[in-house]
Length: 248
Image (cartoon, rainbow, N blue to C red; front, side, top):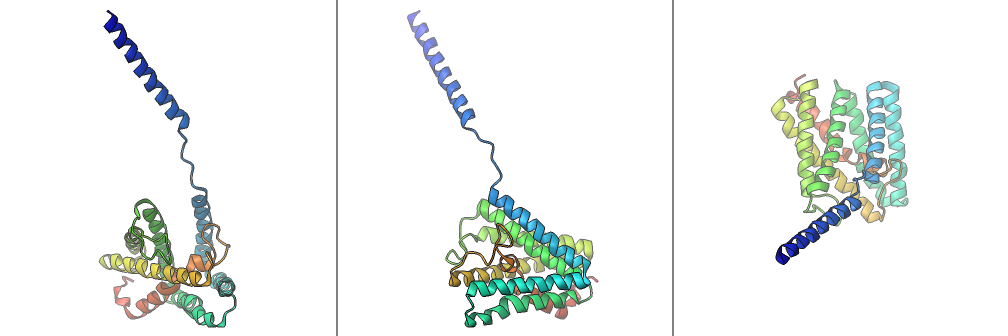
């Protein structure tokens, strides 16, 4: 009888410990809150994307005025980054003149607005996918001394997402033949990352983190438009020389 009483007492103690453990776990549980920086990035990206696409579809004076404003702000940010060093003005040809001139050229082509919209959405979808995939699965860094947050997983995720977005837009707007969409989508994602690394390297050399502050969570216009540095000239040449890949 005494032995049975001891076992019951032990069971009660274990049960009480388990109940207390559950109570403690419930008391310490906190509902995950959306990262404030992520929310800020999402809002500023949405506003910037809407503004650019609005100007693109309005066309005419509105689009040209928007492009002029982007060039002016980019030039101001470049001057602030390089502290007026005249040797860095050569770099402005690559980071400002070349991409914006190429974008204007694309816009003036037949179906140029749709091509430019595709390029824009492809680049930005690459950034979004690379950010989330890299954040979730990224381990191996690509160039940690230049851009410590860029991972190989993020790069592959960005390329895959860009290929899918290009395929979808091709099916909707008749841009490319379907098999070709996957290839050009991945190439755009890869080249866009090269532009990102180029701008990151320049900022590292100049000792600054962001090119500006106009887009909270992202930085300046140069930070937001770095994906166009090499992709815009590439697409301009590609459309001109290999238009046979277009459906219409």
